[in-house]
Length: 193
Image (cartoon, rainbow, N blue to C red; front, side, top):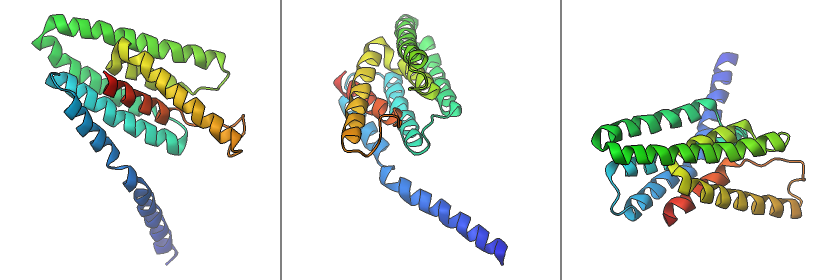
């Protein structure tokens, strides 16, 4: 009998967690549809790359919001997806693929480098997951998309954090997850490109 109760509680907790996630379920599909609509003139591989950053970025934002961390496995999946998308590009059009690879490498170095610098200088003010997430996101966004995504994301995060401090919802020593704001910054950047 006690075993059944334990199973029932566990099952109810899982169902409750699922119910909490359901309101968020449509957001990546809406964003994906918007990207497809606004992506006029882009080839299929570029569209796939944009879709992956929208979907995986969304998952990272939700996980970071709930757990205050970005799992390494998610960052590895994000990297593997980028590699899988780029391999066909290399066979289809070598010249444009090399240009895209250079842009992606600059995005990785910019996103990862800036966040690594902040991570080292801030004394745990920024998580290592944020550094890895932004570095791999730089592969998807390229150099021209990484800087605006960081700008919009950190600006929004700073404004929300400041508002929460002024409203006395959090103290100055509390931390807020950064991935949701970086994700919004990425979406803004993708829509403006």
